[in-house]
Image 1 (cartoon, helix red, strand yellow):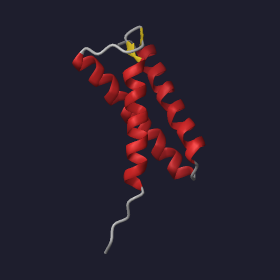
Image 2 (tube, one colour):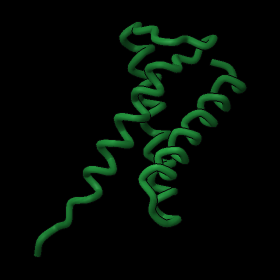
Image 3 (tube, one colour):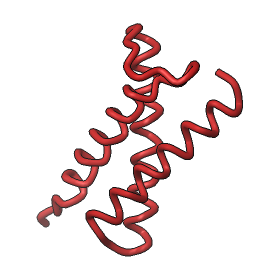
Length: 88
């Protein structure tokens, strides 16, 4: 994977995180949380697609479909897990 492909994947992941923050709302820390989750999920989806040989919406060597799916799933699950509070 080339550097421009990685940068494009990073930009797409950051756009997913920013869009999710726009829809769900929250402060600045929550924006950083969503951006981090989105990048992590996109990378995991990309790696899973390469590892399993799943090709969903390929754009050059970037598996845009699997990365997007990973990003969205990680955002939803991560936000859901962040809503739990520890009881003392």
